[in-house]
Length: 441
View (cartoon, rainbow, N blue to C red):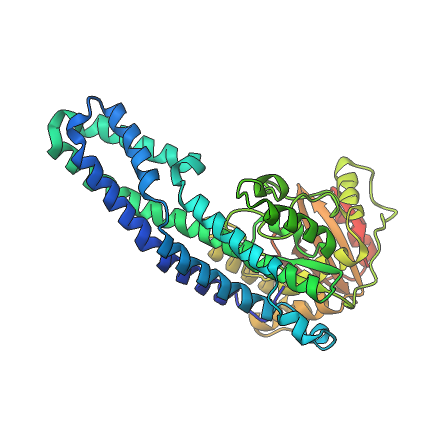
């Protein structure tokens, strides 16, 4: 939740890790491309059709994109450094003070397995760009077919035609290669860092951990649905051990599947117990122990109607523990008026919305500047007297009330929608409640 960090500055250390590993891997991949092209030119006289040529091109790329041993050695060293640094920072001070420091810094066989398994993930997926990513393969084939249709068959123009084709194909495929390499490294490094944290929790006998999403404008609905969820460390360790003992990079898809939509069920039923939840996931796990939680409830107000939306809202919150609901409420301390929600003009739209609400409500508060209005909402969110969850037109909101101060914040995007004063809160809620509502505090 990291309230003190500006959007875009989240986990700069993690971004630096990805850049360093990419600098190790990318030159080797580009060298493999050049080597594949040279082989294709050398055997070009044997091609009799463009279909044969395109098929051999993809097979040759697969053959030449595999990482050589010297690159894998450098990659292993980089992964080991990342693992050790992450594990050293995994525990808060209150837990470190009661842990035997020698046991904690001891580098164990399980730690080595985590690092070696991540290396296998890199080696496996970086070595099979086109087999492993059907969308990338399809884009490449579509590009080749378009070239064939627009510029003619390179086979029919001899070796020079193939050379010209490969020059243009190289300009297309190199950015695709860097993008795919970055995607693989970014996701596998997140796996490694969270595995390091899990092993740290195991050594320190931390029984529970919390899923921590970035909660910025780039946070997806899947990660937002997992934010604040609390898991048993032992359950995750059993899955981690099974994955890494297998030494099979494919088994992770079965035991730690990518989530494709927001999770609405119970935490115990989530198949993916720790980040990453999906490709390019930026979430992390943090130790959960002795945190002060809010006195939450899940109560249907007497004015709420029994609608499908009401039942959906109740089911969602009944699947969360009191501690998880508390964490979900706390996340709104990181909510922002100016959080864009998509589209080219999203930031301008959110700024326009803030200005509109300030002009509408400034007199009732006595605020002189938009900054006063903008920042005052956090006094309500930080110490609310009442909190309601609302669902309206399929979107989830939290309503924070303190005295006659009334704040509405999107629970899906953590964007503050409005802030005003209400004389009679109960009547206001009765008259404005639309689809479903629950009292949480």
